[in-house]
Image 1 (cartoon, helix red, strand yellow):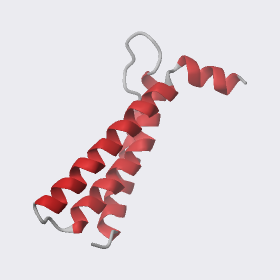
Image 2 (cartoon, helix red, strand yellow):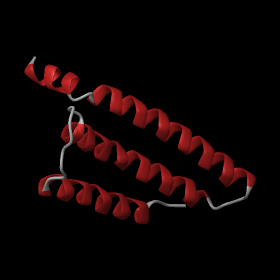
Image 3 (tube, helix red, strand yellow):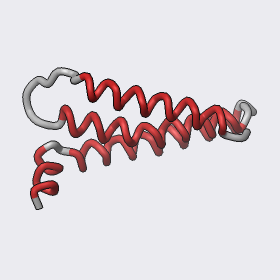
Image 4 (cartoon, helix red, strand yellow):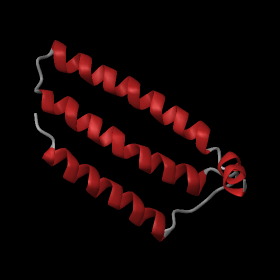
Length: 97
């Protein structure tokens, strides 16, 4: 139960709910624009890959900065965000479209 209490105190559930709702809205808008302006399907696919990988970054951000008060970025956090970015780039290159 200690993990659940820690997740509550860091507002992880609230942050993830905001991120997921924003990501779904973004995906809907991009889908609309790709259909209206006849953009390649790859644009939508790449956006979905980045939004999906962004879930990990949002989770990291909520964990490291969810408590009250000012927090500084730690080296480990920057490294983890960088790994998520590299993963998103690699996956977006491999997306068919």
